[in-house]
Length: 49
Ligand SMILES: [Zn+2]
Image (tube, protein in one colour):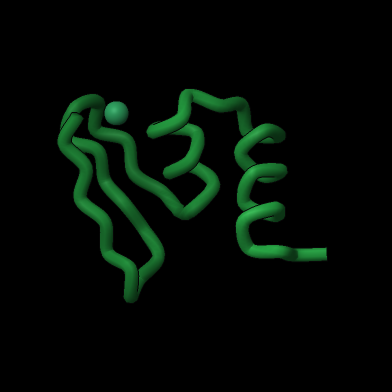
């Protein structure tokens, strides 16, 4: 997997499949989750209420 992440912009690009996007898309891509699952994971990790 070839991923390029720009933390300052909070975006990533995957050179494998050409996807790019924000943190939710990033979790979806690397962990193969659905949008709702990715959202849940991010909320937990970031400790968002
Ligand atoms: Zn990809």
